[in-house]
Image 1 (tube, rainbow, N blue to C red):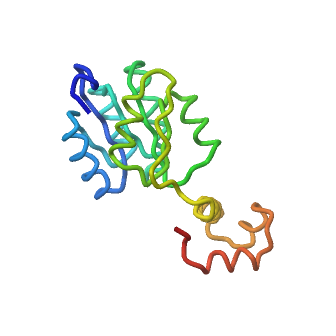
Image 2: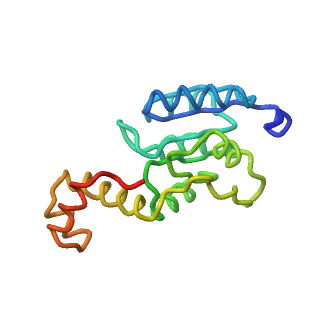
Length: 181
């Protein structure tokens, strides 16, 4: 990406609790002309957003100390023109809608690479970025959803099966297998 596509203000805030991912992404975004600041928690992200509201932000939805949407709200309050991309390890329509309603510019599922993130940050108007090169398979999306509900039910198989409207033994077989590609 040419630096003139980014604009004069190149500040970028990355908020994710996956330290190796944040470091890799920060290096990649610096090479693309961004001035990067990182945080690994909601508290850290909000502190930076309050002190120095960024022109761009990439925020993980699920962080150890809370929800990344809290950081999105803080940025929106301080800097309404900021372009914000929300990342998450699982794709869900409800969370995508919530992220966009609260002020996110776009929503990407992990694993997202620096090219996809840059395209989403710099997309003009309502244009959608191109589809990902390696999207998750339908089996993988299903598995991710089951894992998410299982975690939300405190790893209770019976409760998870009830909420997913599936037989308990079927769920146990799915949980015993490795994740699909």
